[in-house]
Length: 573
Ligand code: FRU
Image 1 (cartoon, protein in one colour):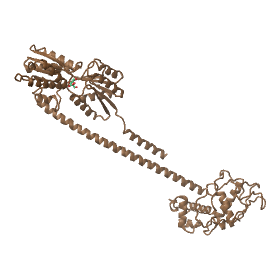
Image 2 (image 1 turned 90 degrees about the vertical axis):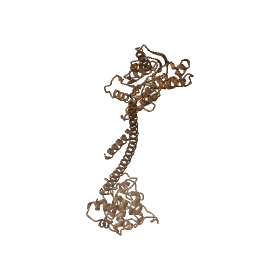
Image 3 (image 1 turned 90 degrees about the horizontal axis):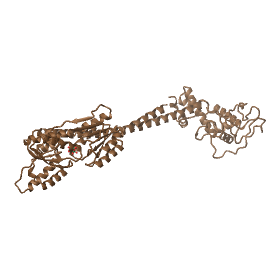
Image 4 (image 1 turned 30 degrees about the vertical axis):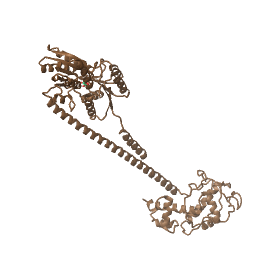
């Protein structure tokens, strides 16, 4: 019972150990259309936010402005068994089928920042791209007094922010009759493409006819600026002033739009909020069944030379804080790993200790069981031998020496290797006195010996079986041993004489029946009697030793320990 409890406790310990390896509760897939500074900020925000939720695992995929690749990546993310998909579709049309497939498979889908043509999403998060374009037009008009020639460098064709920023910008500019968008060039959101496109345009058109360049994002505006700078320096006419450059994104950090406005590389930008933290929180709200807004419009603001310095200082502080948070997160991760390792070690140590405890308990139970068996055997009288085998050297009881007597055959003289009464005394008697006997067979048909001190053994009806003869013989031998064991001088010759046998005859018969020699049986009988006396009397160990025929108590103690595995003094404890 105790063993079962311990085993159950052990199993529980192992389960605790196994549980330390559990999987994250929520697996969120994030499909980014591009790889750039704006996405980097957003991904970092999502990661940081996820560290506040220990049971969230994020898988990022980036399509590097390739709609086909993004569709494949979405399918792959879904196939990995994510619980929710966050996706910024590269283009309006081409990524929609993959998003629809994800949504139709039952997955919650958050579309953010760029749109799809489908309505199959769980939530949508974005700033107002149309309004950004319009506000930028108004700001430019204010800067130029409502007059000017404008170059527009657009974002990727077919992506919703490019379309909306374009429409908003034109709607704003159209309010000013003296403002004119002279060129709308197609870029793809990258600085390199914008630079090349503008460069190409300026090789065919004069650079100094433009007052304003509006890039659909800051990188595009900076790319255009590089192209204008190149053309201005290579023009033969005295260097014309550069146009004003405006963009969108207004990112914090050393390479962000806020600093570019502060440093007069850009005239204005518009903060296009990344809000990775909000996206992740929304995802968890959806997963955990909390209420959430289906459409979230992010607020944003213009970055101008007037507010750029303050915004930059603030953004610096934000950067520092997020770096500190990142360091804290790393430290926390380290502690967590350490803690997990320590816990695993503790669990293992506990398991080993528990195993040891179980082993000790089993050993103790086994040992106690053995002791009980021995004790039982002694108390029930070890001499209760009901042998069943034929005794070599014992003839049919009907033969010689008058009727129902057992007659012994001749035995050879004592061999030199034969045991002596004084030899060291080993081992105990087998339980039934003979390894081949059927101890269950009761000796009930056997009458007790009729005369003490004689070797004749009688059956009830004059037809003694070999087993009955063995039993009676041992019984007779037992009586002699028990009567005389107190004599420390007792020898095998004495015992043999008492049974009217020679020493060799006695040895052979006893050995044949019990498997042990007479000396061994004598010693075992003495030790068993000693065991009984220790349990049932107040005699000292020395008194008991003498009482059972040992001439030296120390030798009794030694033999007792060998026989019962415990010291006589400890038996009473
Ligand atoms: C980032 C980005 C931003 C831009 C937005 C438009 O990938 O190119 O610079 O404002 O995407 O979707």
